[in-house]
Length: 180
Image (tube, rainbow, N blue to C red; front, side, top):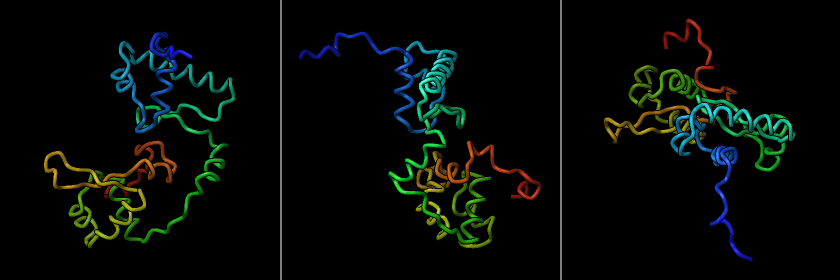
């Protein structure tokens, strides 16, 4: 049987955008999609995402394209998450010490922060709490552009997922937190 993939027409725009979303990674922004697909405009990208969601609903698919952090990602509908948990195991509950919770709150609200900044704000050593939060995938190490040997800490997508946030903008804001 001959390979006709070389002579066939390129896939339609709808399938190209769907493939970009399927690949995963950070949420796909219109700007990034337009860089990846020659001739794609932000408006076409938005219309394509709407068409995909309309098709997914009509076909009763277990996934949808959701907006997160100014971009889009392909995610399972909530009623199908139990299937994923059975396959990969459920989220294991980990108890965080008060020190780890303090550090996590500081990083979440003031990121990026380096270790010295965290310790200055807390008034105590925070190295073990930072290592625990990195190990649990709640924060990540980010290299500073100005000084590549210096690292800072930022929250991760796992942090957003576990705390059921779409973005950092969803963090609670109160007068007490303004002083952080």
